[in-house]
Length: 247
Image 1 (tube, rainbow, N blue to C red):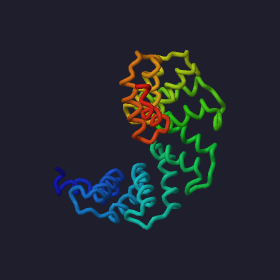
Image 2 (image 1 turned 120 degrees about the vertical axis):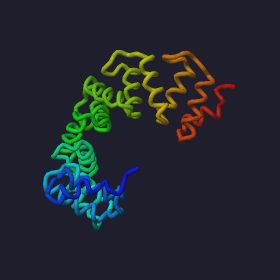
Image 3 (image 1 turned 90 degrees about the vertical axis):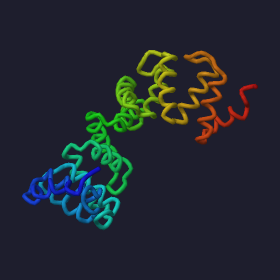
Image 4 (image 1 turned 60 degrees about the vertical axis):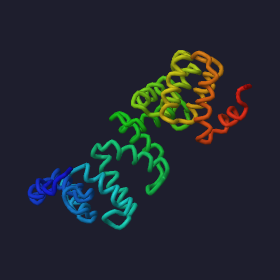
């Protein structure tokens, strides 16, 4: 449990202009750690920290202005701090700036710039950004089609537990896109995504067990996965469950 003395370790340094201490004090105020929760006080200290170059405070301000916590909701101000955090290397800011530019949400739409930020985030290990790059290379719609490069990024995201990337990587093995066709490897990745709750992967896992594709045929296991997918609204899985697979 955090003690009431927690923020006092930072206050003296914060008042002397230490950016890291200012950011920590702001976060303590925001979370009510060892002090009364006060979102306005949090924003006050984050502004000081960001003014002194603290990149995490820049991200915190982006979130605060976006949600209207501790300050009046202001999407333009949020976007300003989002870009500043991204330019200072905050990976989650880089990914989110990419998404806002791609969607044209709160900023002018710019797909080319969006992918520049996705790449920066992906290179820093952001699984969501890696998935965006991988799926875009494979689709060939927003980036020039390149299955080898697509698989490379999908694998990076999949290995971090990104369910959609795991499912997509399974598809590349099923179809031999950028990798040698390998049904067992396809099913391996579908099962990983299925365990994480991806409905499409659950359906494909069910189909693999039903047909004995890349794994031993097992109708009971097929039905188990079809039911899980159906419970999430997957229409194909619902039809399979209703059919009973010929039982």
